[in-house]
Length: 261
View 1 (cartoon, rainbow, N blue to C red):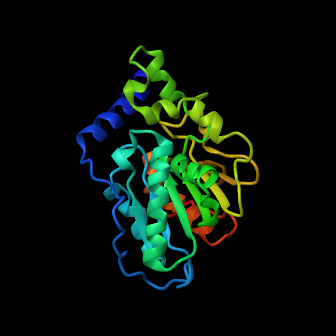
View 2: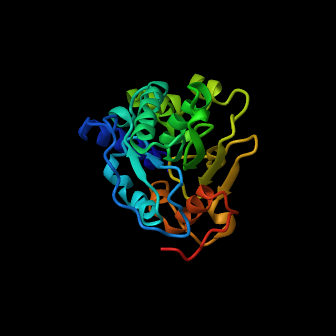
View 3: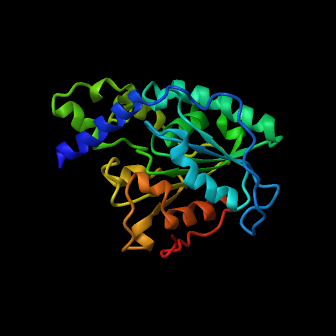
């Protein structure tokens, strides 16, 4: 089991190194035309989907397409360097991207749907870079808010400090980065915070570390849908997980559709 988890981490890092270094920090393109549905009025905040470690933008098109179909102006943010580097540095780049989206749409605030490391980048922006003034809702999917043992395992097996991946080091349980991020209030500002996690998450262990304190809505998929099997990457593809995201974006109650495709 340890070796399989380690292989997953190393595979992510290797894929990132071989992938294109292009990022989504350029001026955002106009999103695809949105349909009108009961779930998203024309005045709804634009939504920025924030990718995770080694997550190329195209990998998030499925969830972005669902959001567009529900009427949201949707953008995808690929982390600089595919998220291998320093998380606070990525957060500063993300701050610039948020400003670009606001300028291009005329919106005062945006909503954020962030996967994995993207949730930490977004939370750092909110907590340390004044982002609470420009974000209305924060939704994380499988984010190691309090770290993950998978990152620790790489060092434990003698493969170096997270195989040299800075972001992996920072996502290790007990890291200085996480100690700073989680000091004080987990949910600053008037932002509505929602976290979504799954028992089958291969990369966030223990899975309870994907939740935050201080008034957030923390949703475990299997607490509502015990038979639903959703992995770490599956959180951005799964229909049930998306129904939780959709509810969070309209400040609705947690009512997952356990049969959603």
